[in-house]
Image 1 (cartoon, helix red, strand yellow):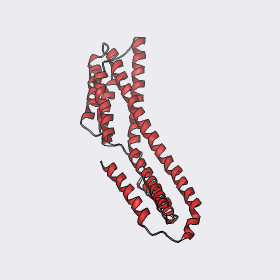
Image 2: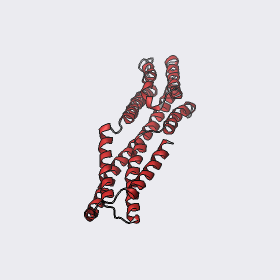
Image 3: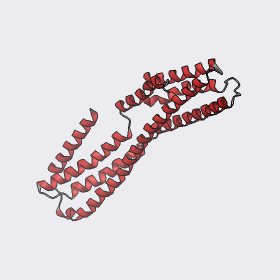
Image 4: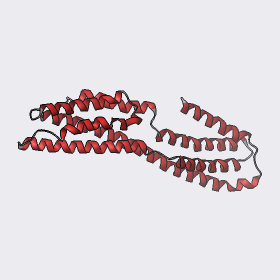
Length: 240
C-alpha cells in the first residue's frame, strides 16, 4: 500500500515540477549531452546495487532451502540410529520439530531467536551411546556432517538478514539521484513535450531508487512465505 502511494507521489511531483517550474535561460540547454551521460551513469550505478540486492535475496532463499534439507536429513539419520540410543534419538527428533514449529511464533527478521532451539538439536547428538558397527559409524559421521552444514547455512541466513544497505549508503544513493534530477530540470526547453520528457526521466530516476528500496528489504508477505516453509517441513520430516 505504502509503495503504491510513494510511486503515485513520485509521478505527480515529478511531472508537476517539470511542467510548472520556470525554464531557465537557454545557456543551460547546451549541456543536454552531459545530462544524458549523468542519467546513464546513475542508471549503471543504481543498477549495480539493485542486482546485488536481488542476488542477496536469491542466496537467502537458497540457504533456507538448504537448511531445511539438512534438517530433514538429520531427522532421517537419527531415526536410523534410534535402535542404538532411542532416548537421545527421540530427543533430537523432538528438538527438530520444536525448532521448526518456533517459526509459527516469530517474525522471520527474528531468526536468531531460534538459536537456543538449534542447540537443543545438537546437544544430544554429541552424547550418543557407543557406536561400533561400521554402518552405524558411517551414519553417525554423516549425521555430524549434516549438523555442521545445517549450522553453516544458519550462519549464512543470519548474515543475509543483517547485511543490508547502511544509512550512509542510502544517503549516497539519494544524492546520486538528486544530481541527474537537477540536470534534467535545468536543461528543459520551454515546449511542453520537452517538459514531459524531463518529468518522465525524473520519474524513472526515483522509481529506480524505489525499486532498490523494495528489493533491499524483505516485505511482510515474503517473511511469511519463509516462515511457512519451515512450518510445512514439519510434515515432511517423515518422508523417505
